[in-house]
Image (cartoon, rainbow, N blue to C red; front, side):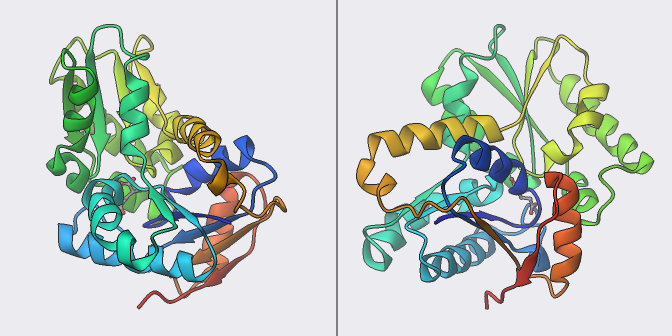
Length: 271
Ligand code: DGL
């Protein structure tokens, strides 16, 4: 199974594209809804929570875990890859979402001025600026946090009229930073769940980029380059859904709305 982890509902926006790209592969989704949002938490806390989730997914039999969470990718991925994996599980892999997005962005922007919307943690980490300018030194990255968007999604208000105000506020704040922005990366996996509202708030000539298709293409490429990992994946086309929330049926209901089909979910404790 491939483990897919996020602080809550956001990773579903990546999972949907992974399922579509790899319909025969088995997935396990884990949302740490009980402790979301991660975006306002410290490096140490995000690292500790993410490591707990990764260990749990390893225990469940996943040889490969995707951190479908920018905040965890920014704050925990490197430590887990370099410090923990070598002694914890040298034959398993943990991949993030920021690097593949940075790789894809070169083909998307013409002006070379890229806007990023993310959690306060992701923006403060500077990860997008670092990764994008490493690959494209002539690019300018302008990042703004949209701190209310994750709580709006987590609390089930993604489709509400009230969400429009917060979407307009953050997109206008970003676009005011540089009139040359022609591409906006939704650098938080929760944000595609607000996609229609974001698209409406942003002028048509600006591309609004969701990470799901990018991460799916990157994972397919990874498995192609690592046939030994590909061969370890079980192939029954199933997905099991876990949440740390006590209310697993509430999670299933909300996740079902985002995924557009009924699912069932179980509560799982991380600590
Ligand atoms: N969905 C996550 C991300 O991509 C984190 C949201 C949060 O818990 O703050 O950053």
